[in-house]
Amino acid sequence: MSKFGVLSNRRGIKICNVYLKITDLIYGPAPTIPHVVIKNAWVVKVNLKKQSQRGFVAVTLLTVLSIATVLVVYAALLGLFPGGEVTVGGVEGAQIQYSLNNANETGPWTTTLNPGAVGTPWFARMNITAGDYSGPVTITWQLQWKNGTGGWEDVSTSETTSVALTGAVGQIVYASNNGTFVAGNHNWADHVSTAGTYRVYATVDSA
Image 1 (tube, rainbow, N blue to C red):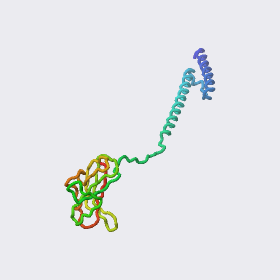
Image 2: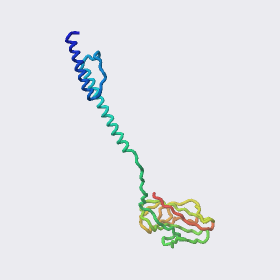
Image 3: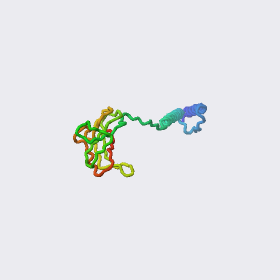
Image 4: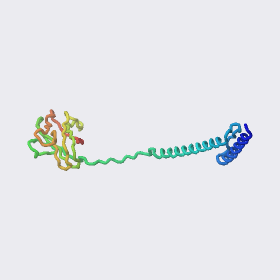
């Protein structure tokens, strides 16, 4: 190695040591670098700069992750609060009316009936007395018999009517296929084989 080469190498080591002292004040003590591995002071300086940049990037990433974690915590489910039920429209009141006469709509139609002998035809209809529901509905008519303990038992199969309610009080729905008055209005005597107390029970469901 030439004289100038040795001087150049020593100068590089001196520059490196000065730089390390400065970085010690800023970043804390750095590990001692033997002069044997220092071939170029500028390479060491660049490496230290890279380490500083990597440290800055790491701190930045940790900060971002911390913020993201806080955001996730704030997005967690805190509670469920269901509101009360809101009923819009409905059939709030209706009468089941009976008649022995199905020849016309005038009846007379009453809320109670005494047909007399078993087999005497009798008919039923519904008179809407309260509510403002409008739209298609299905009405299920069920004949029931009053047993010895005062309870009601279903008799035979039910009948159904598909009709559109207008929302008007006083609408009449007959126990026929489409709810209108027809000669085919259901004769409930067809299901009665013995004397007793009977009634027609109607259920209205939205279609």
